[in-house]
Length: 190
Image 1 (cartoon, helix red, strand yellow):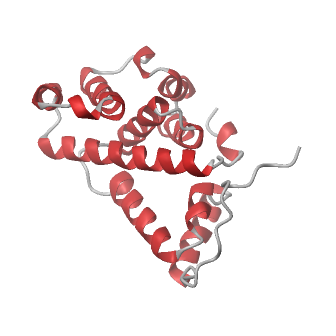
Image 2 (cartoon, one colour):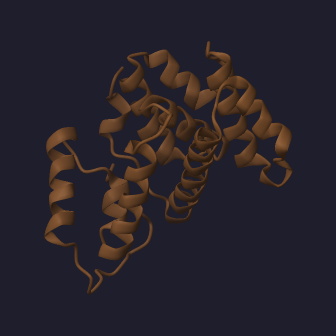
């Protein structure tokens, strides 16, 4: 069976071709992972859009924060689970499996995070992620206070919220373009 294209849209190459720095970024991904994630290929048609996406992703997921990389990936998976985002569930579920060293935890995050044995602090963050994704209009001060009571600082709440917002955007772009995950993600950290 022939594989599906990376996205369902046939995007023309922009006059703003990838810069040497951007191409090096893709080359480093290929070297470290053994493949270039399709999400990056999906943005590679336009250098400004590629830069915007990668800069925000790198800041939110790798930048200075009170949240660990694993905690941020868990939030990404819960948001993606609430949105049924096939691409992000596959890619970020693999990241949770890899970072935690626990394939079961990765599957729990994808299927139903409530089945996982989590501390009160992380449970509060994931409950907030789910609620902000499914019912953003009803988030109010008691929701933020629940996070504070669980041990998150206001800066942490900002970072949690930014990761949630980014993955809601990314999930919607994946759905709109039928972005497909790389096959390699399915076998990672099992």
